[in-house]
Image 1 (spheres, rainbow, N blue to C red):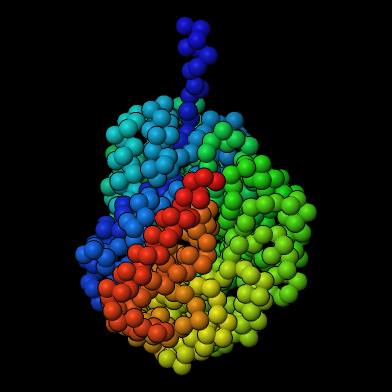
Image 2 (cartoon, rainbow, N blue to C red):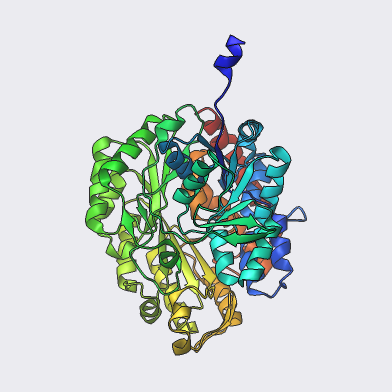
Length: 546
């Protein structure tokens, strides 16, 4: 009895779950149902190849050829760890876990403790079907737990649906409680505190709860929190070699294509002393090789960015770091500081290489500034990824040619162009749709200078004509997987060679030649398999011994 008392774990009040992935087949079938010529499917078609009679996204190709189970969900995601850290700071016993095979034993053990609440984060869920599967999984494992669902999925559903339809979807997902708040962490904390006293949650604001057989809203209440993650809480937890964190909330810019500042609210930075303390805790984790800052604009304002870089240099942090970056403000001094602080790579929201389109986007940048910034980054040895939007209001075939020329001149390491998604919450639609003659939604739109079908053709033109950079797919292999793969032992050169080999096959399948086209499919497949064999023999073997 005494031994049992010593080994019994305390009650788990809240378990926070990360992203659940239903796999490529589910996603491909869902987009296929919209039609092979739909914008959704044509966008996805740039992300997979056919190998051994199977449709495989690039990461699945790498896994198939090397015997791995790589997936970006193996990375410790910032939303679950931040929520767990926030709740722990309030004296609430909270844990987090994910669904990747490497964490399944841990997840099952935590669920076996019958947590009072299981919180489902939905940061990247595009359909309620995924949340429904997660709820079903939780019900089977711990039927007595309260299942709380919150995050961007609930916010988006609430915005796009009529109230009656929204409540029907909530019922179908199957959760017990839903958080409707832009942040939501304090709401979740209030819910947990209330459950210590009573099962009546009607006094907790920002919730949809069951009342007389249907979901009702408890009323809105503002909240704000911005705290560093306390990584010392997880000294004994294996978090992998690549971590994520943030140093600010929201974004100080108001680009007309983006609704993120509308959803996230006012931009608020963390104190640099708090950032330093958090990074020191990460440095103490000896196996951390890469750190991803998810700040929407990490290098703005420039003075704060320089102070953070000098702080990182002063502390001699050994991990590489990656982030979003506004490259129009980059100069030799900033690039030198970035290189000295171990910057591994940056995501550049270039969006367009045409000055008139950039003005409509309110990017506060010029193609000349972009070119200069990318040149400085390349000269400093920093990997770059240029993200482009094709088909935005004001876009024409000529403006796309300007974008292609910018990429050819600048030569970022990777690039990707996607057809514009007409988001009704974005300022371009909500404030000036009539000015640009915008009609339609999502990937099916038209405006004064282009229609969506031509936008899809321009994406193909971009893929075929830009030869000084490597086309990076979006599905499961976008920029943010690069630090994860480097943490697994791959070099950027190996990643480029692998992606280029896949791009050769993609080029043949979609009928769009690129660079010096390979016309022999057997040769292209053999080249891909050789590269994968090299990666398996060298990088994965070296990472396993690290």
